[in-house]
Image 1: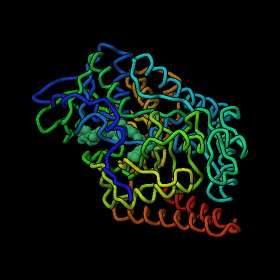
Image 2: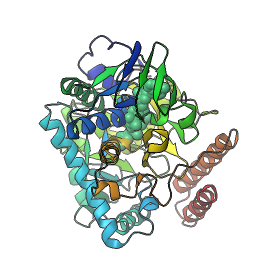
Image 3: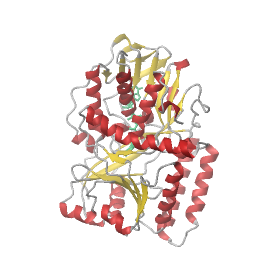
Image 4: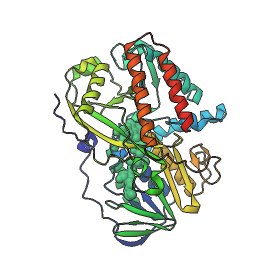
Length: 469
Ligand SMILES: Cc1cc2nc3c(=O)[nH]c(=O)nc-3n(C[C@H](O)[C@H](O)[C@H](O)COP(=O)(O)OP(=O)(O)OC[C@H]3O[C@@H](n4cnc5c(N)ncnc54)[C@H](O)[C@@H]3O)c2cc1C
C-alpha cells in the first residue's frame, strides 16, 4: 500500500514562495481590479500592463497566488479548446481554420513569453497522444475523434493517426492499437509559471494583494474584509472558485478533478514505457484519464472528478486513499511496466464549467465587469488566450482575438452568460451523467461485441446535453 502524503507535487517542487504579499488595507484607487491570482487573472494583468503601461492594476487574491486550479492542474498546455465545436458552430471552413490556427499558435506564444520573461516553468512541447489502448472499441472512438478534429478546422499535418508501430515509437501502452497524435500540445510546471509571472508583474508595476478575499463588487469598486478599491472596471478571474461571488457562481459550476504523481521512475522503466519525447497522453473514454512524463521523470496522472452538492469548490487539496488507488490501477493497466510503483503525491482542485459548455471572455462595460472562464478542464492554455482577448476588448483594440467566437460584449449575438439551474437539479444531473458514463465504460470493457452500446449511450448523453442547452 502506498504511503501517500496527499500533497500537491507542484507545490513541493516549485521554489519556495516568499512570505504572503500584503493584504489590501484602507481605501485605494486603480484603473483595473482583478479578482483571483490564477492564470486568467495574472495573464490579464500581464497583457493589460504590456499594452498600456500607464494603467494602474491591482490583483486581489483570497488566498495565495496559485491557490485555485492554476496551481493544481495536470500541466497540459492544449492547442485547442473544450467546447470548441459549440463555439465554431455556424462558422465557415476558413473561419474555423483561422480559429484553430490561433489556438495552435497560442501554445507557442506561451512558450515564447515564458522565454522572453525568463520564467523557468519547464515548458516542453512534446505533443499529445490519444491512445486506443484499453479495449478494442477505443480505436473507433479515436478515429472518430480525429475526423472531428479535422472537421473543427485542425489541419491534417497537426493531427494525424499513428498505427500501432508508430505509436510504440512514442510511448508503449499495453495492447495499443494506435492512436491520434496532436502536435500542438505542451506541458508545463504550472506553479513555477504562476510564481514567475507574479514576480514579473511586480517588476512591471502591478500590485498583487494576497489574503484579500473580495466580499462584494459593484460597478465602481470592490470591498474586502480590510479594504476598498475604487475602480471603473473589475475582472473576475475566479473560474471554479467563484462560490463566494454571488454574481459569478450562478454561471460557472465547480467540478472536482483529482491527480496523482508517481515517484521518479528508473531508466529501465522508461525504456519499457518509452516517452523519450515527453508527450502528454490520454486514452479514449469518459474517464478522461490523462498524464505526462514530468521533467524529473515521474508520471503525473489524472482521471475524472465529480460534482459536490451545492457547487462547493475544493479549497483543500487532500484526496481519499480510494481515489489514489483507482488512479494507480488505471495507470498500471495502461503501463504494466510500472509494477508496484509508489504514488508519492495526490491532490485535487475545482475547474469551472459554464452553462452552455462554451468557454467565454466577456466584457460588460455597463456593469464594469469583465470575466473569462468556463474552460471545462482545459484552461491552462485557454486562460492565456482569453486573457489576451480580454485585454484587447478592455483597451478597445480591434484584433483577430476580439473577433473570435469566445469574445462576448454588448455586440455579441449570444451576449451574456446563462445561469445554471438551482440545486438539487445540478447535482442530480451530474449523478445521472456520471452513472451513464460509468455504465458505458463498464460495458465497453466487458463485452467487446457490444458495438451498439457506445453510440446509444453517446446519443443519450448528447440528447441530455442538448436538452439542458
Ligand atoms: C486537478 C485539475 C487538473 C487540471 N488539468 C488541466 C490540464 O492538464 N490542462 C488544462 O488546460 N487545464 C487543466 N485544468 C483546468 C485549469 O487548471 C483551469 O481551467 C485554469 O487553471 C483556471 O484558471 P483561472 O485563473 O481562471 O482560475 P483559478 O486558477 O481557479 O484561480 C481562481 C482564483 O480566484 C481566487 N478567488 C476566488 N474567489 C475570490 C474572491 N472572492 N476574492 C479573491 N480571490 C478569489 C481563488 O483563490 C483562485 O486563486 C485542471 C484543473 C484541475 C482542478
